[in-house]
Image (cartoon, rainbow, N blue to C red; front, top):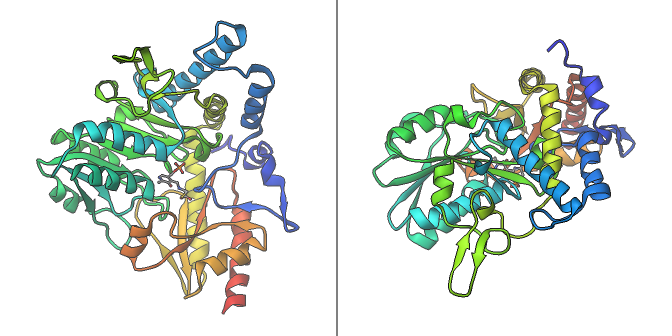
Length: 407
Ligand code: C6P
């Protein structure tokens, strides 16, 4: 981490210099969305200033240039996650849309009555509800891998859930609510030994650790641009080409067709088959800029630094009496959920906000997980590589103050 200079990095993020209620902003809500470096903001702004045009349609110069940038962005994403081909990179709105695409397109064509889909107790609503909707449509069944009290999935139980009726396994890589890092490589290996495809919800992992879809051998992988320092409204669905090729389109309309007549429509080839209508164009271009930024810092440097923040934050929080960390898995990313005594997380969050500290409170879109843990929600801090130990100190002081006030 010798060349990792957090103060230098912070200069790249204009919003980090904002004062909130007269105090220096401490932004610890990175799992909800990350902040953007100036290079990303300027890339998006320059797109509209100099490049704005529709893609894959025009014969004119601007359209050609916009199309090239859009497709260069696809190549950048391919290389970032080490996919085999740009045909495996589908631009979508975010993780939520990526999972809905699979649940609808793959689900409707490959899953039927009495088939089984396996998810885990750690899932975000985005990786629960689309499968429930599929089950309602088809009569398939949803099975859930249980977890222990630390927030780790029970691998033995997972193995027992697999049957000859299991048609898909869809699991979260890193829990947004607890920070647990799931053993996805082992899950994928086990699933593949039974010829079952696996979807990984990478919404909370792509910004924290190196993703290599070829090495993981996952069948589908989903992530959101806004959580990896890119714009909102753009995300990525990776899918193995063979599987995507066999799947029917998700949305119908322009761009996803080869030819249309009232008698028959021939669909476009990958990846365009899944990108109906005018896409978000500045989004992928902004996302490519975010990937450049991550590559410049180095994802391994990011992981190492964030692990130090996690360790420091956990140690300092544990010094506070009558405070419980929710989610104590052996393998964790830089997310810490906690409950202070019997104080309501919302009250804690509100008082922290008055001191310029942004955290998230509530069920974190993981209501079944909260139910499993016997709580209604938590206060959650989530760190990014531009956060500092000094900010953790400010947070701890403010939290002690909040606890004193609320008791
Ligand atoms: N979690 C959080 O504060 P979208 O909204 O499509 O970009 O991502 C949805 C999503 C899916 N899976 C996981 C693991 C997630 O964490 C999220 C988003 C945010 O934890 C907002 S609820």
